[in-house]
Length: 540
Image 1 (cartoon, rainbow, N blue to C red):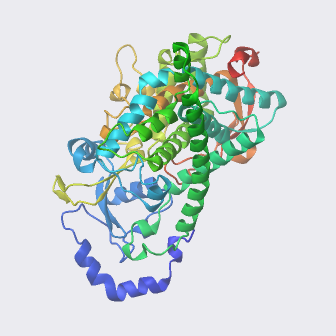
Image 2: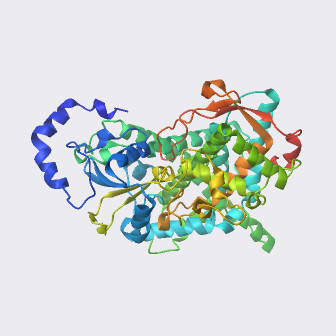
Protein backbone atom coordinates (compact mmCIF):
# COMPACT_ATOMS: atom_id res chain seq x y z
CA UNK A 1 0.00 0.00 0.00
CA UNK A 2 1.28 3.50 -0.89
CA UNK A 3 1.15 5.77 2.17
CA UNK A 4 -0.52 9.14 1.84
CA UNK A 5 2.71 11.05 2.31
CA UNK A 6 4.20 9.25 -0.70
CA UNK A 7 1.60 10.55 -3.17
CA UNK A 8 3.37 12.25 -6.08
CA UNK A 9 4.37 15.81 -5.17
CA UNK A 10 3.45 16.85 -8.68
CA UNK A 11 -0.21 16.12 -7.96
CA UNK A 12 -0.21 18.46 -4.97
CA UNK A 13 1.65 21.19 -6.85
CA UNK A 14 -0.82 21.01 -9.72
CA UNK A 15 -3.73 21.17 -7.34
CA UNK A 16 -2.35 24.26 -5.59
CA UNK A 17 -1.90 26.15 -8.85
CA UNK A 18 -5.04 25.13 -10.74
CA UNK A 19 -7.73 23.64 -8.51
CA UNK A 20 -7.84 25.72 -5.32
CA UNK A 21 -10.55 28.08 -6.65
CA UNK A 22 -12.66 25.14 -7.82
CA UNK A 23 -12.55 23.39 -4.47
CA UNK A 24 -13.23 26.58 -2.55
CA UNK A 25 -16.37 27.01 -4.59
CA UNK A 26 -17.55 23.38 -4.50
CA UNK A 27 -16.81 22.60 -0.87
CA UNK A 28 -17.31 25.87 0.95
CA UNK A 29 -20.58 24.73 2.54
CA UNK A 30 -21.14 27.45 5.13
CA UNK A 31 -23.67 25.46 7.14
CA UNK A 32 -21.22 22.77 8.19
CA UNK A 33 -19.70 22.59 11.69
CA UNK A 34 -16.27 24.24 12.22
CA UNK A 35 -13.36 22.71 10.38
CA UNK A 36 -9.55 22.83 10.37
CA UNK A 37 -7.72 24.02 7.28
CA UNK A 38 -7.75 21.37 4.58
CA UNK A 39 -5.72 20.75 1.46
CA UNK A 40 -6.86 20.75 -2.15
CA UNK A 41 -7.80 17.36 -3.61
CA UNK A 42 -7.22 15.32 -0.46
CA UNK A 43 -9.07 17.51 2.04
CA UNK A 44 -8.05 16.53 5.58
CA UNK A 45 -6.58 13.10 4.97
CA UNK A 46 -3.21 14.47 6.03
CA UNK A 47 -4.58 14.96 9.57
CA UNK A 48 -5.64 11.34 9.99
CA UNK A 49 -3.47 8.51 11.26
CA UNK A 50 -4.14 4.78 10.84
CA UNK A 51 -6.19 4.70 14.08
CA UNK A 52 -9.08 6.86 12.95
CA UNK A 53 -10.94 6.88 16.27
CA UNK A 54 -7.87 8.37 17.96
CA UNK A 55 -7.32 10.92 15.19
CA UNK A 56 -10.94 12.06 15.42
CA UNK A 57 -10.68 12.28 19.22
CA UNK A 58 -7.52 14.40 18.96
CA UNK A 59 -9.23 16.75 16.50
CA UNK A 60 -12.25 17.06 18.81
CA UNK A 61 -9.97 18.30 21.60
CA UNK A 62 -9.19 21.32 19.41
CA UNK A 63 -12.43 21.75 17.49
CA UNK A 64 -15.05 20.60 19.96
CA UNK A 65 -17.43 17.62 20.06
CA UNK A 66 -18.89 18.53 16.65
CA UNK A 67 -16.64 19.43 13.74
CA UNK A 68 -16.37 18.78 10.04
CA UNK A 69 -13.59 17.70 7.75
CA UNK A 70 -13.38 16.81 4.10
CA UNK A 71 -12.24 13.39 2.96
CA UNK A 72 -11.34 14.06 -0.63
CA UNK A 73 -14.59 15.30 -2.14
CA UNK A 74 -16.79 13.93 0.67
CA UNK A 75 -17.82 16.22 3.56
CA UNK A 76 -17.58 14.41 6.89
CA UNK A 77 -19.30 15.37 10.16
CA UNK A 78 -17.70 14.01 13.36
CA UNK A 79 -19.72 13.86 16.60
CA UNK A 80 -18.12 12.93 19.93
CA UNK A 81 -20.75 13.33 22.65
CA UNK A 82 -23.80 11.30 23.76
CA UNK A 83 -26.16 14.25 23.16
CA UNK A 84 -24.92 14.68 19.60
CA UNK A 85 -25.10 10.93 19.02
CA UNK A 86 -28.75 11.02 20.11
CA UNK A 87 -29.47 14.04 17.90
CA UNK A 88 -28.02 12.41 14.78
CA UNK A 89 -28.90 8.75 15.31
CA UNK A 90 -32.32 9.06 16.97
CA UNK A 91 -33.88 12.47 16.36
CA UNK A 92 -32.65 12.52 12.75
CA UNK A 93 -32.40 8.77 12.26
CA UNK A 94 -34.13 8.63 8.88
CA UNK A 95 -31.78 11.29 7.52
CA UNK A 96 -28.84 9.02 8.40
CA UNK A 97 -30.39 5.59 7.79
CA UNK A 98 -27.88 4.59 5.08
CA UNK A 99 -24.16 3.93 5.09
CA UNK A 100 -21.31 4.90 2.82
CA UNK A 101 -20.38 2.20 0.35
CA UNK A 102 -16.88 1.53 -0.94
CA UNK A 103 -15.24 -0.14 -3.91
CA UNK A 104 -14.16 -3.07 -1.73
CA UNK A 105 -17.56 -3.56 -0.07
CA UNK A 106 -19.47 -3.33 -3.35
CA UNK A 107 -17.26 -5.92 -5.05
CA UNK A 108 -16.71 -8.40 -2.24
CA UNK A 109 -20.37 -8.47 -1.13
CA UNK A 110 -21.68 -8.50 -4.72
CA UNK A 111 -23.39 -5.18 -4.06
CA UNK A 112 -25.77 -6.79 -1.55
CA UNK A 113 -24.29 -6.11 1.89
CA UNK A 114 -26.74 -6.01 4.80
CA UNK A 115 -24.29 -3.73 6.61
CA UNK A 116 -23.72 -1.25 3.78
CA UNK A 117 -26.82 -1.46 1.56
CA UNK A 118 -28.92 1.71 1.41
CA UNK A 119 -32.04 1.87 3.54
CA UNK A 120 -34.49 0.54 0.95
CA UNK A 121 -36.80 -2.42 0.23
CA UNK A 122 -33.90 -4.82 -0.35
CA UNK A 123 -32.20 -3.89 2.93
CA UNK A 124 -35.48 -4.34 4.85
CA UNK A 125 -35.98 -7.73 3.21
CA UNK A 126 -32.54 -9.17 4.01
CA UNK A 127 -32.55 -7.64 7.49
CA UNK A 128 -35.90 -9.29 8.25
CA UNK A 129 -34.78 -12.57 6.71
CA UNK A 130 -31.52 -12.65 8.65
CA UNK A 131 -33.10 -11.75 11.97
CA UNK A 132 -36.11 -14.08 11.67
CA UNK A 133 -34.18 -17.14 10.53
CA UNK A 134 -30.70 -16.74 12.01
CA UNK A 135 -30.01 -14.05 14.61
CA UNK A 136 -33.15 -13.48 16.68
CA UNK A 137 -33.70 -15.18 20.04
CA UNK A 138 -35.73 -18.06 18.62
CA UNK A 139 -33.20 -19.41 16.09
CA UNK A 140 -30.29 -18.64 18.43
CA UNK A 141 -31.83 -20.82 21.14
CA UNK A 142 -31.70 -23.70 18.69
CA UNK A 143 -27.93 -23.27 18.38
CA UNK A 144 -27.15 -23.62 22.10
CA UNK A 145 -25.79 -27.15 21.71
CA UNK A 146 -23.64 -26.01 18.77
CA UNK A 147 -22.11 -23.16 20.77
CA UNK A 148 -21.54 -25.47 23.74
CA UNK A 149 -19.89 -28.13 21.58
CA UNK A 150 -17.52 -25.66 19.93
CA UNK A 151 -16.67 -24.02 23.26
CA UNK A 152 -15.80 -27.43 24.71
CA UNK A 153 -13.63 -28.13 21.67
CA UNK A 154 -11.86 -24.79 22.12
CA UNK A 155 -11.27 -25.40 25.84
CA UNK A 156 -9.91 -28.86 25.08
CA UNK A 157 -7.26 -27.25 22.88
CA UNK A 158 -6.28 -24.98 25.78
CA UNK A 159 -6.28 -27.99 28.11
CA UNK A 160 -3.92 -29.89 25.83
CA UNK A 161 -1.61 -26.87 25.62
CA UNK A 162 -1.74 -26.56 29.39
CA UNK A 163 -0.71 -30.16 29.97
CA UNK A 164 2.29 -29.65 27.66
CA UNK A 165 3.02 -26.15 29.02
CA UNK A 166 2.91 -24.75 25.51
CA UNK A 167 1.92 -21.28 24.40
CA UNK A 168 -1.34 -20.74 22.53
CA UNK A 169 -2.26 -17.93 20.15
CA UNK A 170 -5.58 -16.98 21.73
CA UNK A 171 -6.26 -14.36 19.07
CA UNK A 172 -6.11 -16.94 16.29
CA UNK A 173 -7.97 -19.62 18.26
CA UNK A 174 -10.77 -17.21 19.21
CA UNK A 175 -11.21 -16.36 15.54
CA UNK A 176 -11.39 -20.09 14.78
CA UNK A 177 -14.03 -20.52 17.48
CA UNK A 178 -16.14 -17.66 16.12
CA UNK A 179 -15.75 -18.90 12.55
CA UNK A 180 -16.73 -22.46 13.50
CA UNK A 181 -19.92 -21.27 15.17
CA UNK A 182 -20.92 -18.84 12.41
CA UNK A 183 -20.06 -21.37 9.70
CA UNK A 184 -22.23 -24.10 11.18
CA UNK A 185 -25.10 -21.69 11.85
CA UNK A 186 -25.12 -20.76 8.17
CA UNK A 187 -23.92 -23.89 6.38
CA UNK A 188 -24.74 -26.67 8.83
CA UNK A 189 -22.31 -29.24 10.22
CA UNK A 190 -19.05 -29.26 8.31
CA UNK A 191 -17.02 -32.43 8.10
CA UNK A 192 -13.39 -31.33 8.35
CA UNK A 193 -11.96 -34.80 8.83
CA UNK A 194 -10.57 -35.01 5.30
CA UNK A 195 -7.55 -32.99 4.25
CA UNK A 196 -9.57 -31.43 1.41
CA UNK A 197 -12.31 -30.18 3.74
CA UNK A 198 -9.81 -28.96 6.32
CA UNK A 199 -7.91 -27.09 3.63
CA UNK A 200 -11.10 -25.47 2.40
CA UNK A 201 -12.00 -24.32 5.91
CA UNK A 202 -8.54 -22.84 6.43
CA UNK A 203 -8.71 -21.03 3.09
CA UNK A 204 -12.17 -19.69 3.95
CA UNK A 205 -10.95 -18.37 7.31
CA UNK A 206 -8.02 -16.68 5.59
CA UNK A 207 -10.26 -15.05 2.99
CA UNK A 208 -12.71 -13.79 5.63
CA UNK A 209 -9.79 -12.32 7.58
CA UNK A 210 -8.47 -10.54 4.48
CA UNK A 211 -11.92 -9.18 3.63
CA UNK A 212 -12.36 -7.82 7.15
CA UNK A 213 -8.94 -6.17 6.92
CA UNK A 214 -9.54 -4.49 3.57
CA UNK A 215 -13.00 -3.28 4.65
CA UNK A 216 -11.30 -1.35 7.46
CA UNK A 217 -8.75 0.41 5.25
CA UNK A 218 -9.16 3.80 3.61
CA UNK A 219 -9.00 3.68 -0.17
CA UNK A 220 -8.36 7.17 -1.53
CA UNK A 221 -10.22 6.24 -4.71
CA UNK A 222 -13.45 6.06 -2.67
CA UNK A 223 -13.12 9.74 -1.74
CA UNK A 224 -11.02 11.62 -4.30
CA UNK A 225 -12.98 11.96 -7.53
CA UNK A 226 -9.94 12.42 -9.76
CA UNK A 227 -8.36 9.20 -8.50
CA UNK A 228 -11.34 6.90 -8.97
CA UNK A 229 -10.02 5.38 -12.18
CA UNK A 230 -6.54 4.98 -10.75
CA UNK A 231 -5.28 2.38 -8.29
CA UNK A 232 -2.51 4.26 -6.50
CA UNK A 233 -2.66 2.09 -3.38
CA UNK A 234 -3.07 -1.25 -5.14
CA UNK A 235 -6.56 -1.84 -3.73
CA UNK A 236 -8.00 -2.94 -7.05
CA UNK A 237 -5.61 -5.85 -7.47
CA UNK A 238 -6.08 -6.96 -3.86
CA UNK A 239 -9.86 -6.79 -4.14
CA UNK A 240 -9.95 -8.83 -7.33
CA UNK A 241 -7.63 -11.50 -5.91
CA UNK A 242 -9.72 -11.84 -2.75
CA UNK A 243 -12.92 -11.90 -4.84
CA UNK A 244 -11.58 -14.66 -7.07
CA UNK A 245 -10.67 -16.85 -4.11
CA UNK A 246 -13.94 -16.28 -2.27
CA UNK A 247 -16.13 -16.75 -5.33
CA UNK A 248 -14.43 -20.07 -6.07
CA UNK A 249 -14.99 -21.27 -2.50
CA UNK A 250 -18.62 -20.18 -2.19
CA UNK A 251 -19.51 -21.44 -5.66
CA UNK A 252 -18.23 -24.89 -4.68
CA UNK A 253 -20.33 -24.79 -1.50
CA UNK A 254 -23.45 -23.72 -3.40
CA UNK A 255 -23.07 -26.38 -6.09
CA UNK A 256 -22.58 -29.11 -3.50
CA UNK A 257 -25.65 -27.95 -1.57
CA UNK A 258 -27.76 -27.69 -4.72
CA UNK A 259 -26.80 -31.23 -5.67
CA UNK A 260 -27.74 -32.44 -2.19
CA UNK A 261 -31.09 -30.65 -2.46
CA UNK A 262 -31.75 -32.32 -5.82
CA UNK A 263 -30.99 -35.70 -4.30
CA UNK A 264 -33.41 -35.06 -1.46
CA UNK A 265 -36.18 -34.03 -3.84
CA UNK A 266 -35.64 -37.17 -5.89
CA UNK A 267 -36.01 -39.47 -2.92
CA UNK A 268 -39.25 -41.36 -2.58
CA UNK A 269 -41.30 -39.69 0.15
CA UNK A 270 -42.99 -42.78 1.47
CA UNK A 271 -43.64 -41.69 5.04
CA UNK A 272 -44.30 -38.48 6.93
CA UNK A 273 -41.28 -39.27 9.11
CA UNK A 274 -39.10 -39.03 6.02
CA UNK A 275 -40.46 -35.54 5.40
CA UNK A 276 -39.76 -34.56 8.96
CA UNK A 277 -36.29 -35.96 8.67
CA UNK A 278 -35.68 -33.82 5.59
CA UNK A 279 -36.48 -30.73 7.63
CA UNK A 280 -33.52 -31.44 9.87
CA UNK A 281 -31.24 -30.54 6.99
CA UNK A 282 -32.66 -27.01 6.62
CA UNK A 283 -30.01 -24.59 7.75
CA UNK A 284 -29.74 -20.91 6.86
CA UNK A 285 -28.21 -21.69 3.46
CA UNK A 286 -31.24 -23.83 2.63
CA UNK A 287 -33.51 -20.94 3.60
CA UNK A 288 -31.56 -18.57 1.35
CA UNK A 289 -31.71 -21.02 -1.56
CA UNK A 290 -35.45 -21.48 -1.00
CA UNK A 291 -35.92 -17.73 -1.37
CA UNK A 292 -33.65 -17.65 -4.41
CA UNK A 293 -35.54 -20.47 -6.15
CA UNK A 294 -39.06 -19.44 -5.19
CA UNK A 295 -38.66 -15.65 -5.32
CA UNK A 296 -41.15 -15.39 -2.46
CA UNK A 297 -41.02 -11.60 -2.47
CA UNK A 298 -41.69 -10.43 -6.02
CA UNK A 299 -40.83 -6.84 -5.13
CA UNK A 300 -37.28 -7.73 -4.09
CA UNK A 301 -35.08 -9.76 -6.45
CA UNK A 302 -32.95 -12.33 -4.66
CA UNK A 303 -30.38 -14.02 -6.86
CA UNK A 304 -27.35 -16.26 -6.53
CA UNK A 305 -25.16 -13.18 -6.19
CA UNK A 306 -27.29 -11.95 -3.30
CA UNK A 307 -26.82 -15.30 -1.54
CA UNK A 308 -23.04 -15.10 -1.98
CA UNK A 309 -22.88 -11.50 -0.79
CA UNK A 310 -25.05 -12.06 2.28
CA UNK A 311 -22.98 -15.06 3.39
CA UNK A 312 -19.77 -13.04 3.08
CA UNK A 313 -21.39 -10.19 4.99
CA UNK A 314 -22.38 -12.40 7.92
CA UNK A 315 -18.97 -14.05 8.10
CA UNK A 316 -17.04 -10.79 8.13
CA UNK A 317 -19.41 -9.12 10.61
CA UNK A 318 -19.63 -12.08 12.97
CA UNK A 319 -16.17 -13.61 13.08
CA UNK A 320 -13.73 -10.82 13.89
CA UNK A 321 -16.13 -8.67 15.92
CA UNK A 322 -16.84 -11.33 18.54
CA UNK A 323 -13.29 -12.67 18.65
CA UNK A 324 -11.79 -9.18 19.01
CA UNK A 325 -14.18 -8.28 21.84
CA UNK A 326 -13.30 -11.44 23.78
CA UNK A 327 -9.61 -10.79 23.14
CA UNK A 328 -9.78 -7.27 24.58
CA UNK A 329 -11.82 -8.44 27.58
CA UNK A 330 -9.24 -11.11 28.43
CA UNK A 331 -6.44 -8.59 27.96
CA UNK A 332 -8.04 -6.21 30.46
CA UNK A 333 -8.55 -9.04 32.95
CA UNK A 334 -4.91 -10.10 32.63
CA UNK A 335 -3.82 -6.53 33.34
CA UNK A 336 -6.28 -6.09 36.23
CA UNK A 337 -5.71 -8.98 38.58
CA UNK A 338 -8.10 -7.75 41.27
CA UNK A 339 -10.96 -7.63 38.77
CA UNK A 340 -10.02 -11.10 37.53
CA UNK A 341 -10.15 -12.55 41.04
CA UNK A 342 -13.55 -10.95 41.70
CA UNK A 343 -14.88 -12.45 38.49
CA UNK A 344 -13.57 -15.89 39.40
CA UNK A 345 -14.96 -15.64 42.91
CA UNK A 346 -18.41 -14.98 41.46
CA UNK A 347 -18.13 -17.96 39.09
CA UNK A 348 -16.98 -20.27 41.91
CA UNK A 349 -19.84 -19.08 44.12
CA UNK A 350 -22.60 -19.39 41.53
CA UNK A 351 -21.37 -22.29 39.38
CA UNK A 352 -18.89 -24.12 41.59
CA UNK A 353 -15.69 -25.85 40.58
CA UNK A 354 -17.06 -29.23 39.52
CA UNK A 355 -18.86 -28.24 36.32
CA UNK A 356 -18.35 -25.81 33.48
CA UNK A 357 -20.22 -22.52 33.34
CA UNK A 358 -23.08 -22.56 30.81
CA UNK A 359 -25.22 -19.99 29.01
CA UNK A 360 -27.95 -20.59 31.58
CA UNK A 361 -25.56 -19.37 34.30
CA UNK A 362 -24.55 -16.05 32.74
CA UNK A 363 -27.68 -14.07 33.75
CA UNK A 364 -26.76 -14.95 37.34
CA UNK A 365 -23.22 -13.56 36.96
CA UNK A 366 -23.69 -9.77 37.26
CA UNK A 367 -19.99 -9.08 37.78
CA UNK A 368 -19.10 -10.97 34.58
CA UNK A 369 -21.78 -8.97 32.77
CA UNK A 370 -20.25 -5.77 34.17
CA UNK A 371 -16.79 -6.90 33.01
CA UNK A 372 -18.14 -7.30 29.48
CA UNK A 373 -19.80 -3.86 29.60
CA UNK A 374 -16.60 -2.24 30.81
CA UNK A 375 -14.62 -3.93 28.04
CA UNK A 376 -17.14 -2.63 25.50
CA UNK A 377 -16.78 0.88 26.95
CA UNK A 378 -13.01 0.90 26.45
CA UNK A 379 -12.94 -1.27 23.32
CA UNK A 380 -16.31 -0.95 21.53
CA UNK A 381 -17.06 -3.56 18.89
CA UNK A 382 -17.94 -0.65 16.58
CA UNK A 383 -15.48 2.17 17.46
CA UNK A 384 -16.96 4.46 14.83
CA UNK A 385 -20.65 4.51 13.89
CA UNK A 386 -20.59 5.64 10.26
CA UNK A 387 -23.70 6.74 8.37
CA UNK A 388 -24.54 8.62 5.18
CA UNK A 389 -26.87 11.61 5.01
CA UNK A 390 -29.67 10.77 2.57
CA UNK A 391 -31.78 13.88 3.09
CA UNK A 392 -30.70 17.34 4.18
CA UNK A 393 -31.31 18.07 7.84
CA UNK A 394 -30.52 20.69 10.44
CA UNK A 395 -28.66 19.88 13.65
CA UNK A 396 -28.43 22.90 15.91
CA UNK A 397 -27.26 25.78 13.74
CA UNK A 398 -25.71 23.51 11.13
CA UNK A 399 -27.12 22.35 7.80
CA UNK A 400 -26.00 18.82 6.91
CA UNK A 401 -26.02 18.24 3.12
CA UNK A 402 -27.10 15.08 1.33
CA UNK A 403 -24.12 12.80 0.73
CA UNK A 404 -22.21 13.89 3.82
CA UNK A 405 -20.61 11.17 5.91
CA UNK A 406 -21.49 11.08 9.60
CA UNK A 407 -19.02 9.63 12.09
CA UNK A 408 -20.08 9.13 15.71
CA UNK A 409 -16.94 8.40 17.71
CA UNK A 410 -18.06 5.65 20.09
CA UNK A 411 -14.52 5.12 21.30
CA UNK A 412 -14.08 8.77 22.33
CA UNK A 413 -17.48 8.90 24.05
CA UNK A 414 -16.56 5.85 26.13
CA UNK A 415 -13.39 7.56 27.38
CA UNK A 416 -14.69 11.09 27.89
CA UNK A 417 -14.07 12.31 31.49
CA UNK A 418 -17.20 14.48 31.24
CA UNK A 419 -19.30 11.31 31.30
CA UNK A 420 -17.09 8.71 32.99
CA UNK A 421 -15.21 8.86 36.27
CA UNK A 422 -11.58 7.77 35.82
CA UNK A 423 -12.30 6.82 32.20
CA UNK A 424 -8.95 5.11 31.55
CA UNK A 425 -9.40 2.69 34.46
CA UNK A 426 -10.93 -0.75 33.96
CA UNK A 427 -13.62 -0.66 36.66
CA UNK A 428 -16.60 -3.01 36.11
CA UNK A 429 -18.00 -1.81 39.44
CA UNK A 430 -19.23 1.35 37.71
CA UNK A 431 -21.97 -0.80 36.12
CA UNK A 432 -23.11 -2.41 39.39
CA UNK A 433 -25.70 -1.18 41.85
CA UNK A 434 -24.95 -1.49 45.55
CA UNK A 435 -27.85 -2.04 47.94
CA UNK A 436 -30.30 -0.68 45.42
CA UNK A 437 -28.28 2.45 44.77
CA UNK A 438 -25.71 3.13 42.13
CA UNK A 439 -24.25 5.64 39.75
CA UNK A 440 -25.98 6.53 36.51
CA UNK A 441 -23.59 4.15 34.77
CA UNK A 442 -25.10 1.20 36.62
CA UNK A 443 -28.36 1.76 34.75
CA UNK A 444 -26.82 1.86 31.29
CA UNK A 445 -27.89 -0.73 28.76
CA UNK A 446 -25.69 -1.70 25.80
CA UNK A 447 -28.50 -2.50 23.37
CA UNK A 448 -28.61 0.93 21.75
CA UNK A 449 -30.86 2.84 24.15
CA UNK A 450 -28.20 4.80 26.05
CA UNK A 451 -25.96 6.96 23.92
CA UNK A 452 -23.09 7.01 26.39
CA UNK A 453 -22.49 3.36 25.45
CA UNK A 454 -23.28 2.16 21.92
CA UNK A 455 -20.98 -0.82 21.25
CA UNK A 456 -23.42 -2.20 18.64
CA UNK A 457 -24.76 1.07 17.28
CA UNK A 458 -28.43 1.98 17.60
CA UNK A 459 -31.72 2.29 15.77
CA UNK A 460 -32.70 0.56 12.57
CA UNK A 461 -29.09 -0.18 11.67
CA UNK A 462 -28.04 -1.60 15.01
CA UNK A 463 -25.73 -4.60 14.61
CA UNK A 464 -27.94 -7.63 13.77
CA UNK A 465 -25.48 -9.95 15.51
CA UNK A 466 -25.86 -8.22 18.88
CA UNK A 467 -27.92 -11.04 20.46
CA UNK A 468 -25.37 -13.67 19.46
CA UNK A 469 -22.47 -11.57 20.74
CA UNK A 470 -24.16 -10.95 24.09
CA UNK A 471 -24.69 -14.68 24.51
CA UNK A 472 -21.18 -15.69 23.47
CA UNK A 473 -19.02 -13.05 25.14
CA UNK A 474 -19.85 -13.57 28.83
CA UNK A 475 -19.93 -17.34 28.38
CA UNK A 476 -16.56 -17.67 26.62
CA UNK A 477 -14.83 -15.20 28.95
CA UNK A 478 -16.28 -16.90 32.05
CA UNK A 479 -15.34 -20.38 30.81
CA UNK A 480 -11.75 -19.41 30.04
CA UNK A 481 -11.06 -17.73 33.38
CA UNK A 482 -12.90 -20.48 35.26
CA UNK A 483 -10.65 -23.16 33.78
CA UNK A 484 -7.31 -21.45 33.22
CA UNK A 485 -4.77 -18.93 34.35
CA UNK A 486 -3.17 -17.20 31.36
CA UNK A 487 0.56 -16.59 31.60
CA UNK A 488 1.67 -13.82 29.28
CA UNK A 489 4.47 -14.66 26.87
CA UNK A 490 7.43 -12.36 27.56
CA UNK A 491 7.50 -10.72 24.15
CA UNK A 492 4.16 -9.09 24.88
CA UNK A 493 5.29 -7.52 28.14
CA UNK A 494 4.87 -3.80 28.58
CA UNK A 495 6.54 -3.97 31.95
CA UNK A 496 6.68 -6.23 34.98
CA UNK A 497 5.09 -4.82 38.11
CA UNK A 498 6.29 -7.65 40.30
CA UNK A 499 2.88 -9.33 40.48
CA UNK A 500 2.86 -10.62 36.93
CA UNK A 501 3.41 -9.52 33.35
CA UNK A 502 1.47 -6.59 31.95
CA UNK A 503 0.20 -6.81 28.41
CA UNK A 504 0.84 -4.17 25.82
CA UNK A 505 -2.52 -2.72 24.82
CA UNK A 506 -1.62 -1.21 21.46
CA UNK A 507 -4.29 -1.21 18.76
CA UNK A 508 -4.18 -2.18 15.11
CA UNK A 509 -6.24 -0.32 12.50
CA UNK A 510 -9.38 -1.97 11.19
CA UNK A 511 -13.16 -2.08 11.39
CA UNK A 512 -13.07 -3.69 14.83
CA UNK A 513 -9.69 -2.30 16.01
CA UNK A 514 -8.02 -5.56 17.12
CA UNK A 515 -4.91 -5.81 19.24
CA UNK A 516 -1.71 -4.83 17.43
CA UNK A 517 0.05 -7.79 19.04
CA UNK A 518 -1.80 -11.09 19.05
CA UNK A 519 -2.64 -12.47 22.48
CA UNK A 520 -0.19 -15.31 23.08
CA UNK A 521 -0.30 -16.99 26.49
CA UNK A 522 0.58 -20.22 28.21
CA UNK A 523 -2.64 -21.58 29.78
CA UNK A 524 -2.29 -23.12 33.22
CA UNK A 525 -5.12 -25.34 34.44
CA UNK A 526 -6.83 -23.70 37.39
CA UNK A 527 -9.13 -26.58 38.33
CA UNK A 528 -7.81 -29.95 39.47
CA UNK A 529 -9.52 -31.76 36.61
CA UNK A 530 -10.20 -29.46 33.68
CA UNK A 531 -10.66 -32.35 31.27
CA UNK A 532 -13.10 -34.01 33.63
CA UNK A 533 -15.62 -31.16 33.46
CA UNK A 534 -15.45 -30.69 29.69
CA UNK A 535 -17.95 -33.47 28.94
CA UNK A 536 -16.03 -35.45 26.30
CA UNK A 537 -19.27 -36.63 24.73
CA UNK A 538 -20.04 -33.04 23.73
CA UNK A 539 -17.21 -32.89 21.20
CA UNK A 540 -17.45 -36.30 19.64
